Image 1: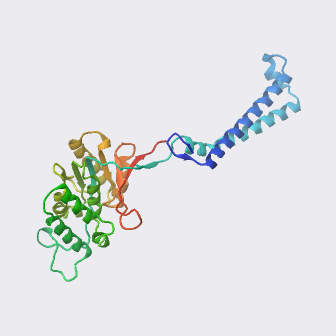
Image 2: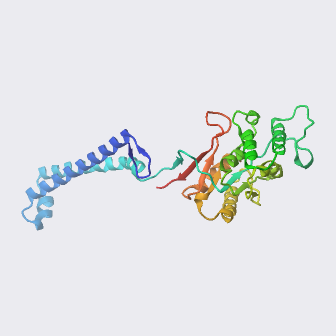
Image 3: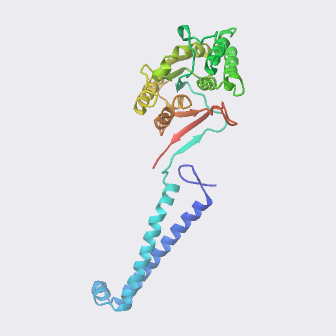
Length: 314
Protein backbone atom coordinates (compact mmCIF):
# COMPACT_ATOMS: atom_id res chain seq x y z
CA UNK A 1 0.00 0.00 0.00
CA UNK A 2 1.36 3.41 -1.01
CA UNK A 3 0.85 6.35 1.34
CA UNK A 4 0.71 10.10 0.96
CA UNK A 5 2.97 12.20 3.21
CA UNK A 6 0.13 12.64 5.72
CA UNK A 7 -0.25 8.89 6.15
CA UNK A 8 -3.42 8.45 4.13
CA UNK A 9 -3.48 5.52 1.70
CA UNK A 10 -3.18 6.23 -2.02
CA UNK A 11 -5.70 4.12 -3.86
CA UNK A 12 -4.83 2.40 -7.13
CA UNK A 13 -7.06 4.81 -9.04
CA UNK A 14 -5.33 7.80 -7.42
CA UNK A 15 -1.89 6.46 -8.29
CA UNK A 16 -2.96 5.83 -11.91
CA UNK A 17 -4.48 9.32 -12.11
CA UNK A 18 -1.31 10.93 -10.81
CA UNK A 19 0.84 8.95 -13.25
CA UNK A 20 -1.44 9.83 -16.17
CA UNK A 21 -1.56 13.53 -15.32
CA UNK A 22 2.19 13.88 -14.94
CA UNK A 23 2.93 11.80 -18.07
CA UNK A 24 0.47 13.61 -20.34
CA UNK A 25 1.44 17.07 -19.15
CA UNK A 26 5.12 16.24 -19.50
CA UNK A 27 4.69 14.82 -23.01
CA UNK A 28 2.74 17.87 -24.21
CA UNK A 29 5.29 20.26 -22.76
CA UNK A 30 8.22 18.30 -24.27
CA UNK A 31 6.59 18.10 -27.72
CA UNK A 32 5.78 21.82 -27.69
CA UNK A 33 9.34 22.69 -26.74
CA UNK A 34 10.71 20.34 -29.42
CA UNK A 35 8.49 21.88 -32.14
CA UNK A 36 9.57 25.42 -31.21
CA UNK A 37 13.24 24.40 -31.07
CA UNK A 38 13.18 22.68 -34.47
CA UNK A 39 11.31 25.60 -36.05
CA UNK A 40 13.73 28.18 -34.73
CA UNK A 41 16.74 26.08 -35.70
CA UNK A 42 15.49 25.76 -39.30
CA UNK A 43 14.56 29.37 -39.91
CA UNK A 44 17.20 31.34 -37.99
CA UNK A 45 20.76 31.59 -39.28
CA UNK A 46 22.10 33.49 -36.25
CA UNK A 47 20.87 33.87 -32.64
CA UNK A 48 20.39 37.61 -33.20
CA UNK A 49 18.13 36.96 -36.16
CA UNK A 50 15.63 34.69 -34.42
CA UNK A 51 12.92 37.34 -33.98
CA UNK A 52 13.14 38.87 -37.48
CA UNK A 53 13.69 35.64 -39.38
CA UNK A 54 11.37 33.32 -37.39
CA UNK A 55 8.56 35.75 -36.56
CA UNK A 56 8.46 38.83 -38.78
CA UNK A 57 9.68 37.24 -42.02
CA UNK A 58 8.54 33.65 -41.26
CA UNK A 59 6.78 31.63 -43.91
CA UNK A 60 3.31 30.09 -43.48
CA UNK A 61 4.54 26.56 -42.48
CA UNK A 62 6.44 28.14 -39.61
CA UNK A 63 3.26 29.69 -38.24
CA UNK A 64 1.54 26.32 -38.47
CA UNK A 65 4.31 24.86 -36.32
CA UNK A 66 3.88 27.68 -33.83
CA UNK A 67 0.16 26.92 -33.78
CA UNK A 68 0.84 23.25 -33.07
CA UNK A 69 3.21 24.17 -30.24
CA UNK A 70 0.53 26.50 -28.84
CA UNK A 71 -2.09 23.75 -28.90
CA UNK A 72 0.29 21.38 -27.12
CA UNK A 73 1.01 24.04 -24.48
CA UNK A 74 -2.75 24.61 -24.04
CA UNK A 75 -3.31 20.87 -23.53
CA UNK A 76 -0.48 20.84 -20.98
CA UNK A 77 -2.05 23.80 -19.14
CA UNK A 78 -5.52 22.19 -19.11
CA UNK A 79 -4.19 18.84 -17.89
CA UNK A 80 -2.22 20.61 -15.15
CA UNK A 81 -5.20 22.79 -14.14
CA UNK A 82 -7.66 19.92 -13.81
CA UNK A 83 -5.04 17.65 -12.27
CA UNK A 84 -4.12 20.04 -9.47
CA UNK A 85 -7.04 19.02 -7.18
CA UNK A 86 -6.09 15.34 -7.51
CA UNK A 87 -2.41 16.03 -6.80
CA UNK A 88 -3.26 18.40 -3.95
CA UNK A 89 -5.59 15.94 -2.28
CA UNK A 90 -3.10 13.10 -2.57
CA UNK A 91 0.15 14.87 -1.76
CA UNK A 92 -0.39 18.18 0.00
CA UNK A 93 -2.24 17.06 3.15
CA UNK A 94 -5.27 19.19 2.36
CA UNK A 95 -7.81 17.18 4.33
CA UNK A 96 -8.38 16.13 7.89
CA UNK A 97 -7.51 12.82 9.48
CA UNK A 98 -8.91 11.29 12.62
CA UNK A 99 -6.41 8.67 13.68
CA UNK A 100 -7.74 5.90 15.86
CA UNK A 101 -5.25 4.56 18.35
CA UNK A 102 -4.95 0.83 17.78
CA UNK A 103 -4.04 -1.76 20.36
CA UNK A 104 -4.06 -0.82 24.02
CA UNK A 105 -5.74 2.55 24.38
CA UNK A 106 -3.91 5.11 26.53
CA UNK A 107 -5.19 6.45 29.82
CA UNK A 108 -4.93 10.12 30.72
CA UNK A 109 -4.22 11.99 33.97
CA UNK A 110 -6.45 14.86 32.88
CA UNK A 111 -9.89 14.58 31.26
CA UNK A 112 -12.33 17.31 30.21
CA UNK A 113 -15.97 16.36 29.64
CA UNK A 114 -19.39 17.93 29.28
CA UNK A 115 -22.07 16.83 31.72
CA UNK A 116 -25.38 16.24 29.97
CA UNK A 117 -28.55 17.63 31.48
CA UNK A 118 -30.92 14.90 32.63
CA UNK A 119 -34.29 15.67 31.12
CA UNK A 120 -37.40 14.26 32.82
CA UNK A 121 -35.51 13.85 36.09
CA UNK A 122 -37.91 14.00 39.04
CA UNK A 123 -36.11 15.57 41.99
CA UNK A 124 -37.06 15.87 45.62
CA UNK A 125 -35.21 17.38 48.56
CA UNK A 126 -31.56 18.36 47.89
CA UNK A 127 -31.96 17.27 44.29
CA UNK A 128 -32.23 13.60 45.22
CA UNK A 129 -34.57 11.41 43.16
CA UNK A 130 -38.15 10.95 44.27
CA UNK A 131 -38.54 7.32 45.38
CA UNK A 132 -42.23 7.12 46.17
CA UNK A 133 -43.40 7.53 42.60
CA UNK A 134 -45.66 4.89 41.15
CA UNK A 135 -44.07 5.23 37.70
CA UNK A 136 -40.75 7.08 37.89
CA UNK A 137 -39.11 8.18 34.67
CA UNK A 138 -36.22 6.09 33.38
CA UNK A 139 -33.82 8.86 34.33
CA UNK A 140 -35.13 9.07 37.88
CA UNK A 141 -34.98 5.31 38.30
CA UNK A 142 -31.41 5.20 36.95
CA UNK A 143 -30.18 7.91 39.33
CA UNK A 144 -31.81 6.19 42.31
CA UNK A 145 -30.19 2.85 41.43
CA UNK A 146 -26.80 4.50 40.87
CA UNK A 147 -26.93 6.16 44.27
CA UNK A 148 -27.82 2.81 45.84
CA UNK A 149 -24.86 1.09 44.15
CA UNK A 150 -22.44 3.76 45.35
CA UNK A 151 -23.88 3.69 48.86
CA UNK A 152 -23.64 -0.10 49.04
CA UNK A 153 -19.90 -0.20 48.34
CA UNK A 154 -18.34 -1.92 51.33
CA UNK A 155 -15.27 0.31 51.22
CA UNK A 156 -13.48 2.76 48.99
CA UNK A 157 -10.99 0.23 47.69
CA UNK A 158 -10.00 0.21 44.02
CA UNK A 159 -11.64 -3.20 43.63
CA UNK A 160 -14.95 -1.91 45.01
CA UNK A 161 -14.79 1.18 42.79
CA UNK A 162 -14.07 -0.88 39.68
CA UNK A 163 -16.88 -3.31 40.46
CA UNK A 164 -19.34 -0.44 40.88
CA UNK A 165 -18.15 1.21 37.66
CA UNK A 166 -18.49 -2.07 35.77
CA UNK A 167 -22.10 -2.32 36.88
CA UNK A 168 -22.91 1.30 36.10
CA UNK A 169 -21.21 1.20 32.68
CA UNK A 170 -22.31 -2.21 31.46
CA UNK A 171 -23.41 -1.87 27.83
CA UNK A 172 -25.91 -4.70 28.27
CA UNK A 173 -26.96 -3.90 31.81
CA UNK A 174 -29.90 -2.19 33.42
CA UNK A 175 -28.56 1.35 33.06
CA UNK A 176 -28.07 0.92 29.32
CA UNK A 177 -31.64 -0.29 29.00
CA UNK A 178 -32.78 2.81 30.86
CA UNK A 179 -30.72 4.90 28.38
CA UNK A 180 -29.10 6.87 31.18
CA UNK A 181 -26.89 9.55 29.62
CA UNK A 182 -24.58 9.79 32.66
CA UNK A 183 -23.23 6.38 31.74
CA UNK A 184 -20.97 8.18 29.27
CA UNK A 185 -18.88 10.29 31.70
CA UNK A 186 -18.75 7.29 34.03
CA UNK A 187 -17.40 5.17 31.15
CA UNK A 188 -14.74 7.83 30.55
CA UNK A 189 -13.95 7.69 34.26
CA UNK A 190 -13.74 3.90 34.20
CA UNK A 191 -11.38 3.88 31.23
CA UNK A 192 -8.97 6.42 32.77
CA UNK A 193 -9.44 5.28 36.38
CA UNK A 194 -5.90 4.01 36.90
CA UNK A 195 -4.19 7.24 35.72
CA UNK A 196 -6.80 9.93 36.31
CA UNK A 197 -5.81 12.86 38.52
CA UNK A 198 -8.38 15.50 37.52
CA UNK A 199 -11.83 15.03 36.01
CA UNK A 200 -13.08 18.42 34.82
CA UNK A 201 -16.71 19.11 33.92
CA UNK A 202 -18.08 21.77 31.61
CA UNK A 203 -21.66 22.64 32.56
CA UNK A 204 -24.54 24.23 30.76
CA UNK A 205 -26.83 26.40 32.85
CA UNK A 206 -29.28 23.52 32.98
CA UNK A 207 -26.69 20.88 33.90
CA UNK A 208 -25.29 23.07 36.67
CA UNK A 209 -28.42 22.39 38.72
CA UNK A 210 -27.56 18.67 38.65
CA UNK A 211 -23.79 18.80 39.20
CA UNK A 212 -24.08 18.22 42.96
CA UNK A 213 -26.09 15.09 42.18
CA UNK A 214 -23.40 13.88 39.78
CA UNK A 215 -20.80 14.54 42.49
CA UNK A 216 -22.71 12.24 44.86
CA UNK A 217 -22.39 9.44 42.32
CA UNK A 218 -18.91 10.05 40.88
CA UNK A 219 -16.84 11.20 43.85
CA UNK A 220 -16.93 7.86 45.73
CA UNK A 221 -15.75 6.18 42.51
CA UNK A 222 -12.57 8.26 42.23
CA UNK A 223 -9.33 6.68 43.35
CA UNK A 224 -7.46 8.48 46.15
CA UNK A 225 -5.87 11.69 44.93
CA UNK A 226 -8.23 12.16 41.99
CA UNK A 227 -10.43 15.26 42.05
CA UNK A 228 -13.68 16.10 40.31
CA UNK A 229 -13.77 19.79 39.40
CA UNK A 230 -15.86 22.05 37.22
CA UNK A 231 -15.42 25.17 35.13
CA UNK A 232 -16.90 27.97 37.21
CA UNK A 233 -18.64 29.73 34.33
CA UNK A 234 -21.61 27.94 32.82
CA UNK A 235 -22.23 27.92 29.09
CA UNK A 236 -25.26 28.33 26.90
CA UNK A 237 -25.85 24.87 25.49
CA UNK A 238 -25.66 25.87 21.83
CA UNK A 239 -23.37 28.91 22.03
CA UNK A 240 -20.17 27.92 20.23
CA UNK A 241 -18.13 30.86 21.54
CA UNK A 242 -19.15 30.20 25.14
CA UNK A 243 -18.16 26.55 24.79
CA UNK A 244 -14.77 27.35 23.22
CA UNK A 245 -14.05 29.75 26.09
CA UNK A 246 -15.08 27.10 28.62
CA UNK A 247 -12.82 24.54 26.92
CA UNK A 248 -9.91 27.00 27.17
CA UNK A 249 -10.59 27.44 30.88
CA UNK A 250 -11.00 23.71 31.48
CA UNK A 251 -7.76 22.84 29.69
CA UNK A 252 -5.84 25.46 31.68
CA UNK A 253 -7.39 24.15 34.89
CA UNK A 254 -6.34 20.59 34.04
CA UNK A 255 -2.85 21.74 33.04
CA UNK A 256 -2.50 23.27 36.48
CA UNK A 257 -2.95 19.77 37.93
CA UNK A 258 -1.14 17.52 35.45
CA UNK A 259 1.31 19.84 33.67
CA UNK A 260 1.49 21.39 30.23
CA UNK A 261 2.19 18.23 28.25
CA UNK A 262 -0.82 17.92 25.87
CA UNK A 263 -0.27 14.16 25.68
CA UNK A 264 -1.60 13.95 29.25
CA UNK A 265 -4.97 15.55 28.46
CA UNK A 266 -8.02 14.14 26.72
CA UNK A 267 -11.20 15.99 25.79
CA UNK A 268 -14.26 13.75 25.66
CA UNK A 269 -16.91 14.62 23.06
CA UNK A 270 -19.64 12.19 24.05
CA UNK A 271 -21.65 14.27 26.52
CA UNK A 272 -23.24 17.66 26.06
CA UNK A 273 -24.73 18.97 22.83
CA UNK A 274 -23.70 18.55 19.21
CA UNK A 275 -22.28 22.09 19.32
CA UNK A 276 -20.08 21.09 22.24
CA UNK A 277 -18.81 18.07 20.30
CA UNK A 278 -17.99 20.26 17.29
CA UNK A 279 -16.19 22.80 19.48
CA UNK A 280 -14.20 20.05 21.20
CA UNK A 281 -13.03 18.68 17.84
CA UNK A 282 -11.98 22.14 16.66
CA UNK A 283 -10.20 22.84 19.96
CA UNK A 284 -8.11 19.68 19.74
CA UNK A 285 -7.13 20.00 16.06
CA UNK A 286 -3.34 20.12 15.61
CA UNK A 287 -2.90 20.62 19.36
CA UNK A 288 -1.66 17.14 20.38
CA UNK A 289 -4.56 17.05 22.82
CA UNK A 290 -6.41 13.77 22.46
CA UNK A 291 -10.08 13.35 21.71
CA UNK A 292 -12.33 10.57 22.94
CA UNK A 293 -15.77 9.36 22.00
CA UNK A 294 -17.98 6.54 23.23
CA UNK A 295 -20.72 5.03 21.03
CA UNK A 296 -23.82 5.34 23.14
CA UNK A 297 -26.87 3.17 22.63
CA UNK A 298 -26.68 1.20 19.37
CA UNK A 299 -24.18 -0.91 17.47
CA UNK A 300 -21.51 -3.47 18.34
CA UNK A 301 -19.10 -0.96 19.91
CA UNK A 302 -21.49 0.53 22.47
CA UNK A 303 -19.63 1.59 25.59
CA UNK A 304 -16.16 1.11 24.07
CA UNK A 305 -14.07 4.26 24.20
CA UNK A 306 -12.23 5.39 21.08
CA UNK A 307 -9.26 7.78 21.23
CA UNK A 308 -8.46 10.13 18.35
CA UNK A 309 -5.58 12.39 17.38
CA UNK A 310 -7.24 15.07 15.27
CA UNK A 311 -5.00 16.71 12.67
CA UNK A 312 -5.56 18.79 9.56
CA UNK A 313 -3.11 20.59 7.30
CA UNK A 314 -3.11 22.22 3.91
